[in-house]
Amino acid sequence: MSKILKISKPSDYSAWVGQTDPHDLVCVINYSAVSPVRHSLNKYDVYGLFLQGKEEWLDLTYGTGKYDYSEGTLICVAPGQIGGMEDNGELVNLTGWAVLFHPDILQGTGLEKDIRDFSFFDYRINEALHMTSDERDVMITLIKQLENELRFPPDPMQNRIIVGFLNILLRYAQRFYNRQFVSRTIQNNDVMSRFESLLKNYFESEKQMTAGVPTVAYCADALRMSPSYLSDLVRRTTGETANQYIKNYVIQLAKNRLVAGMNSSEVAYSLGFGYPQHFARTFKTMTGETPTDYCRRRLKKD
Image 1: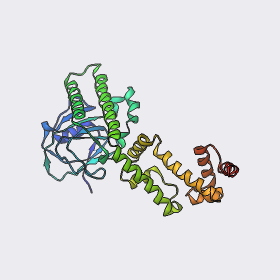
Image 2: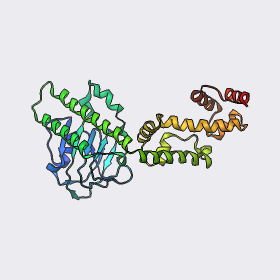
Image 3: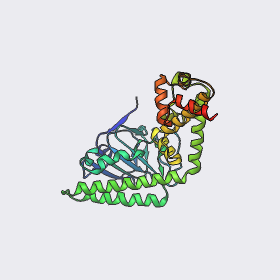
Image 4: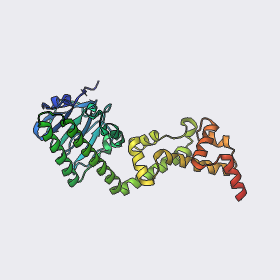
């Protein structure tokens, strides 16, 4: 059985790397100051931002694939996730930074609600942000300011200021993630091409007859990425959600089969819908008309 370090609060991780924290709910770790450290496979009950150094760091367990670490990488984790590398007794020297904070620090703040909008917390490790040198410098500057604030004696304003720094860090991370989707246009187009081929092969092999209409989760897994990352990529590339993209693909197949003479029930079952009524509702939602109305309109045109 894997040895898992349970991180119920930031200090659990700080203690692992040999650091004492001045604040119960937030910690900043400068790996250069605590290295060498042991590996750990972590179960998180906290949020974490891990800004890796320029060295090739760890062969991490969570996610698939390897990174190009030449410009550092930002990894974001959320409560409920497991990540890292199981402790094997080895010590490793790191030069990056980590910020961990407990959800309780956000209570009663705007960030408590807004943090749900940062979908990068749901990404797999291999989808982490590859930062430019300038972007990395911005993050380090903010992290150092947060670290300095944590050293001050507590006062009634401190938690608000801390949450303010966390908010700015996350907003910058969002900006840099958005940049990543724009700057990797060729890679994104390759994913979209593979997404299209996946859907085509799915129906040509009649997988829908046993597995039903493909889901975003199925497609993301087949493409070796998280549903959140696929959804963001599709939305930024096409303006549609991944779910809408799949539905549009299915509806186009449905139109082709209706025009070819299949009735609505036959089309429904041939495309993996469990019930014709479900197909009819989906068709009307996507097109504004029922399958029957669509056929009638096409017959009038012909």
